[in-house]
Image (tube, rainbow, N blue to C red; front, side):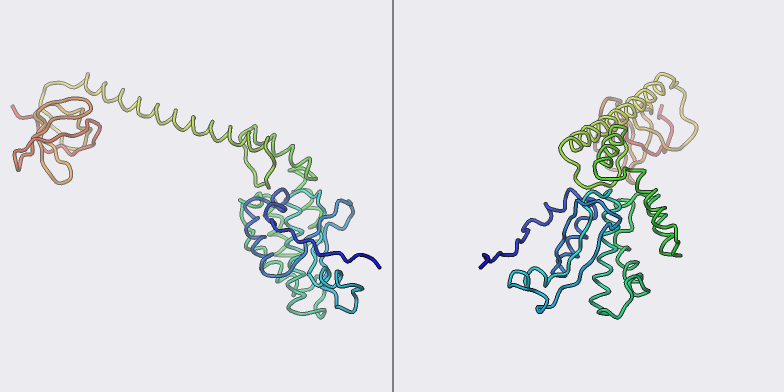
Length: 295
């Protein structure tokens, strides 16, 4: 008598799907898998069948207790070597079959209006440029608006731009990363993670350099304004940097009026005209000019 086998349960489903499912779509897939008892099977055999859905079998069809447990689940099978965009699209396609089966049993056609309505509804949660590139989304949008006999060819062409299978996709993804282009992808391994970290660090350094240059230009313009400033009284009221105004200018900040008593970096010394108290102000603060310098 053969030894009874037990149903293998993958306890870390997120880790199992992480290399195959687009990272930003993975939480949505895990949420779906929590709703039903579903078995996900990956096939390495390349064929024209990219995936299929199989409903649970009745107990009379099962020969053993192990088969009864294993086959009482909904089953979705996918080709493991698919381009990640095609893999995710096929998964949603098969999940729409599962939903239609639960709602209508075997009374609905496999790709009838009930299935297409479920497919369209399910896809809304995945309709995002963070999950699919825009060019692939455009092809899928055309499909949902009007079914085309050339849809599969158009989708395959759009996906193959990023690699026809997982290996070529990985090469394309890495090459684009080196160019500073990030596309939606599953976890692509240590090398891709290292390149991505380098890219993020480079972008941060570029941002800090631009900010430093902006501050340097601001200080340079301030120094130029100081060197060109003459001793004649100001004749025009307006707004200016506090550090660009001469001593004894009357200014307003936060509803209070001050007179500049002494210029300095980084703080100016002021006197509050209402209370007579001394105050300090940063030389780069923009203020309103109230009056010309006092004699």
